[in-house]
Image (tube, rainbow, N blue to C red; front, side, top):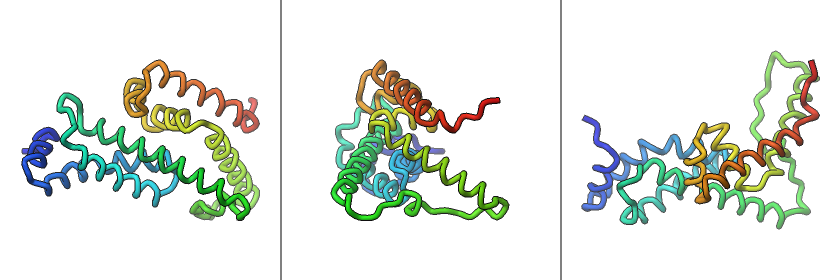
Length: 190
């Protein structure tokens, strides 16, 4: 019989610190996926997962049992991921004089079926997509990712970002509009 999250939380609060590992095992994949989509970097996403679960453990006594642990830890992870993105932006600004090529920092896998023209086009498209996502505010980017990549509801997005549902809906809308404008050159007219 599988133990539910609320039972595990009671076990942890009663002194069984090892029980928290069950929560980590149960929810770390969703937390990692969201962190990776927000940060765009596997190492940063791993760091976010660790930080989110550490913060969750430290604040477990403040967890209100009327909500779901998965939603609560997800919100903590989104905040950690946003902090990481802002930290990386600040670091990038501090190192403006250094060479930074976003294409070179990405892991690239060669497609044996693709010719040089197709590879070049793919790189250009990836670069335009990355630039379009970078043009969004942190809130817009996160709202877009949560809605269109994580398939989260407006209410879940609002909870994760700690904003009103209407503000979450507007953030998604603004993100979509900005991305459409930025990526318009990629549209193929039939």
